[in-house]
Length: 304
View 1 (spheres, helix red, strand yellow):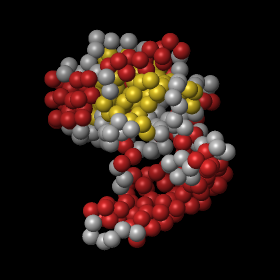
View 2 (cartoon, helix red, strand yellow):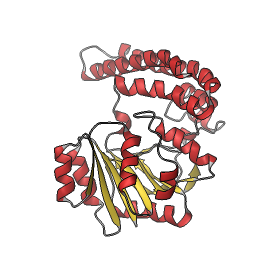
View 3 (cartoon, rainbow, N blue to C red):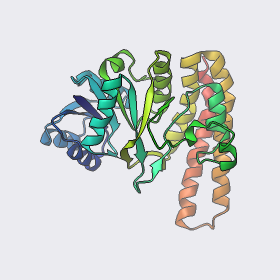
View 4 (spheres, rainbow, N blue to C red):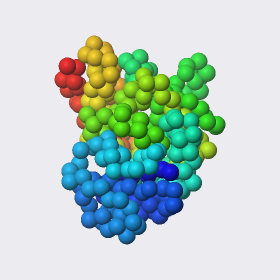
């Protein structure tokens, strides 16, 4: 009924738990083994999963597309390897996707089982300025009453949404072959471009809070490399979707966004007594934010 495509990159323990929890006669389990990790191969073989080996790391989108090409089921659920859910969730996402011919995404919780806000606005210069640059991730109650901010939404029932983070996504296989995840990003923003291209074809995305997965990694991981990719790829995504003019308008917005992140991170470091573990972690975060700002300044190269 459904192919579960798991992109695996050196997380054997998490991978084993996900594969064990989603074993079901109706689920074709496919592991995309990025860089051919021997532990991943051993787990895949021991659990009778198809093991698709990629000799090098070409990014999340390339790994998903390779897994889709190896699948045979009419519906694909693709996922990170640091995700945990049951077979019932995978089958539930696939059933709704298959019945309605739409894309479905689950509710995502963190390791403490607190729901994360994963809905995303369709990327435009305006939404980049409002939802990424101007407003914090956490809702501001006084503003939420007057602004429709997609990233602050947390529906309690199934709703159509413009897009979401690609922690786990169910999609008809034929559609994913026609509109594959774009491989121009390595990581970050590929799902933003993909959801816009789906919308242009009239494909809708449904958020399902009744189907929940736990993301054990996710937003808690911040590194200089991640921040640099977030900055550069925002401008690249605007250019690929709308052309050089939109990228030129979006570049200063991206710079302002990452400048705000640097100022916020630096202020938090200044307010803590030096020598504490929290102060050290916040200095690491500040270093990552600075890397993102420098990458944003250099992202003008993505305009053409």
